[in-house]
Length: 212
Length: 212
DNA sequence: CGGCCGCTCAACCTTTCGATGGATGCTGCT
DNA sequence: AGCAGCATCCATCGAAAGGTTGAGCGGCCG
Image (cartoon, rainbow over all chains, first blue to last red; front, side):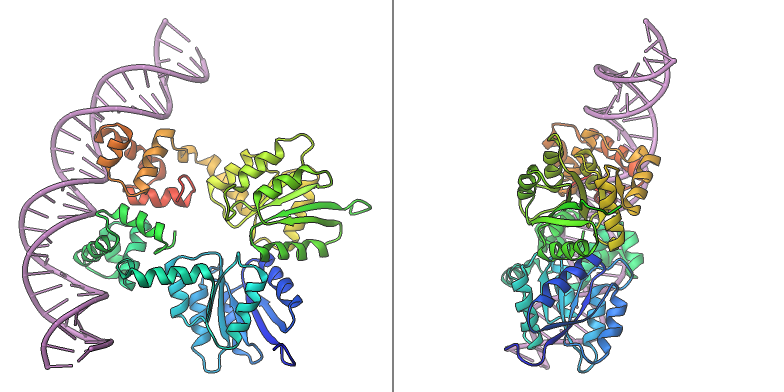
């Protein structure tokens, strides 16, 4: 399997230690070649445009502006783009769905053992999707109980509510009327089985529907 | 400086990639020797008891039961114990204070560049405290603004509010009148500089005053 | 095409929450 | 001892959020 052509990798993570760790783990594995590692999402987008990269290992949260999901979308939008494998600490619904919608080929958690990591990279390089067991489980749960699947707009509203904004502030931020915000909240309450904004935030954070 | 005796290190982190990264970063640096790396806090406590360890690099959050701060306390409680340098992704008040109270010699963030990491280990090995700039800043802020210290009762109330309970439910749970709960909340709002329960929960979680 | 669903908004009424004000008891400082 | 400061407790009232009903618009799918 791992014959002449190695899989060429680009690593994107803002933690120097993690970049060094990925290098150490993957370069000892046969059949992998780390082309470059970068500390920002912007640099990842730039370097992924060059030929000679098969798979990008992408963190989701960077210290700077651009998020990993945005970078993933920017990379996969181009023709002949490399595969993007998201590698992060977090397994919330919001993160996972954003990554998959952005075109990620796989989603791994950083606590994965090296063998699992290597296997996922090979799977991704072959163009098949690679999901960590915990992530796959969460997606199954979501499929099985569609009541807890908030719509994009609902998630957006609830996130702002969780950040402490009032209905009036949310409505201004999203260019909506307060009536619409209330309407969304009512639907959210029904889906989560609660009857107040704070309870909705608690339930949603517990289920990982919004980021903390 | 880095003459005959190298600084002997024990690494404790549940992420294999991070352990590999720390090994890679520190072993290339002269004057360091990694004695062992472990994936759990419990093993860190066990191995730190053996002689031949100068500094423990300790993560704060593990997948398992024991927290890094507990492990730190267990290690530093023993006479002739090695120095513990906490190395984590998070910089919330609660985490930092718990670590320092547990007897950590230093507190570093994982996004630190390798040189800073190496320098901090040398500082810690010499018995001096080593704080990341961001952490030092946060501590300064906390000193300057002592209003963010919630009382026991206030924390109790806010935690229940964060769990999604209404004032009526909180009052029943704590055997209070609703008026008392509201009164506590007003004080909490004043201390946190907010004016609603959801904003208070957001502010308190951001500062690590309550668990999520 | 007709129905389903997500998104948007309005008007009304009810409940809850937040603001204000005041009481008690403990602790520490002078 | 006396006082200041804080944590804890409680009551009342206007304001904000929640609940209800009803409705229009656009996309998706059988």
